[in-house]
Image (cartoon, rainbow, N blue to C red):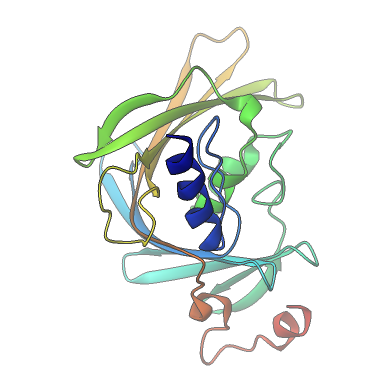
Length: 247
């Protein structure tokens, strides 16, 4: 049994990423690329479901990450440079540097505004999921299935408050990882993220009313040890000279 455990961990490390084999959810470090879909209910009273496709990549060597979301034929890409601590937004109109407080820059955000939509585009990315501190974990892992795939589930809970508005937020993240018993076909490793559910509840102290926003994220493809270079390059036809000079 000990030999199988050691061999399994060695093979994972050989693929240029790491999985914590002892406790908590898998810990991923190193380059990766992923594709998936986000599903959520509009908060305009219509209760309509909206589907948003996304692509994501992290380049460990360049210390850069990119997160692109697609909706109604349009897309916006957020490029994060961890060397300069800059975030850039690229869309059909141009490139610009933006301030996204505590987005994927820290594993322990003091504010939850990072996880709320920025102009209706920035969502909770895999990079942020991987960076969550274990102190936010609630309870033990649970054996379950996700899209019919045998999986392990972990729950995180983060609480925060805006002192200026007296509004509080509770963020719950339910992360589903394959348990290694099923060939995911999307990776040479059998332990990969399958998806996660993000539930955000906002409320004001003394007010019985509260607002819940729930988002389902399906990860349809995940490859470790590789990047998606096209997500880290400027969009053709856009003037990104200022951006490129800093990346």
